[in-house]
Amino acid sequence: KMENLTNQPPKPDNHLVWAILTTVFCCLPLGIVSIVKSTKVNELYAQGNYAEAQQASQEAKKWAMWSAIVAGGLFLLLVML
Image (tube, rainbow, N blue to C red):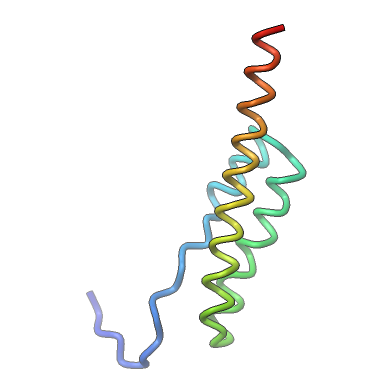
């Protein structure tokens, strides 16, 4: 592992893969929000906005999670009917 000589915090995960998968397989509207949030992570980090990048990462994860939860709930509802 390389030493961090610039005092930058580690780049947060952008959760882009999860965002794309939940958009395709789960809930399109919530997945799109997740993709938008995940694409901001790298941009904010590169600009030195580390706290905002971390927040965008957390929001991307949250929206992807809700997309999967909504899809799971709808699937269960369809199975029960």
